Image (cartoon, rainbow, N blue to C red; front, top):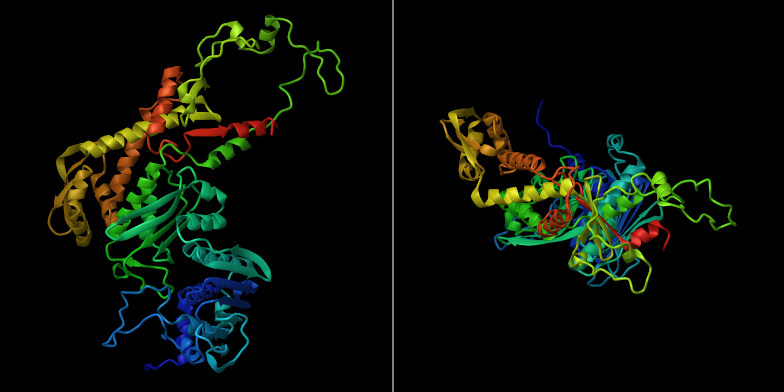
Length: 617
């Protein structure tokens, strides 16, 4: 079969299949064009899930009439400028768009109307494209002083086969809303609006640029719970800056949909960044829980390649290890700064577990009849009756308060008042008792704290073990017979190149010919270990992430197991000093607000919460 040149219309439709995958893809491209044009307000209207109609209007600098026809030509863009020699540097890209494919791709598969009025002055003009056929621009009405309006009707009418792969109108509308939220997160100083079928769905007013304005924008999108439980992240390493907000470990989610990653203002989905985020929370969350985070990376354009995919959702870093180390280190530093803090949602969940009751039970049979609304029962007549009615009333309890004389409980003005302990003003208060040999009850100045003694002590032991590992390194166990592990030559080279890093973790390897490594020592903490399987897992980690995660995660799991067995067990009765000592250690230990599996170690209820339970407010 001879080779033929494809018609331009077919070429454009093929390109459109990569750039415009669904209505949300078209909205993404048009919104990014508006942001690159300096827009401070972006309005989006959709009908039929975006398949019937999409309108994106902005107040950017607009386009002159002679620029409209260029705008719908493939690979025509205002965002790349050649140098004196006529060369264009694709490595120094500072805009969201640069490929010049969005408008011609949309115009080749839909009916597109492009209307614009330049900020420099002049009348507005409009240009129409239907299935790739262009109508020359002409004068048109425009509601604002300057900007651009792009209307897309009957998306994919020119490629009917693509319509069979679309989801429901509701699902497509939700995808568009999610895409607009992502763009709004990265540009808090821009106003965003979304109308679906004429109904207002999203209204995000412009916020002041900076951390406070960004957090307000994130709260409007992700909810007030995220705002209350988010930690500020701001770290720089080798001219790469990581900023944004990350949720407390106890504010975790069941999936990774609340993880938003941006590189130079561009929303991306990158396995390296997602793996680094997972690694930063590895010590604090169970494997089936996911952190909530919105992170922004600012990188020199020369150190990141955004020209990887037509959708521009993937990037490549020149120094991936630096980026990963910055994310893991920066997030862990912010988590450590949170100390023992737990999320506010823990208390909310605890309050929902309380069921108010109107009474303990039926009144004794000897109770006298009473008037409506008033009880005539005057109480038990003797201590013996009380003991029969309430079993265990006189049993010894795990109270911490000092013994008091009976007169101390009398409601007399002259009764001596014991001074409140100074610990009551500390974050976790002073221990007042123990429930079921498992939970410590502490009183704070404005509420109470319930502590799971086993989970709390497990975290304390775990953090001490990690500190000891950091100070003295990992104890190694020499193999009686060194083990040879066969690998792919490239994998073997990656493993031996990181031999120094692996030795710090207790694994001593050396090259053993082409495509093999020799294992001489393994971490003693691992006990009897499959050295070959461990090395192969490390090789896979190095191939995918550039870091030996398998060994680090296995050591973390072993430390967690040892901490669990070495901590205070549930059911053990603690003395008052022991309970208070545990509280003080929790306050001084980072990450003590959650156990090694991400569950909270304590629940704090404010006095106002207790008053609501009893109808006092």
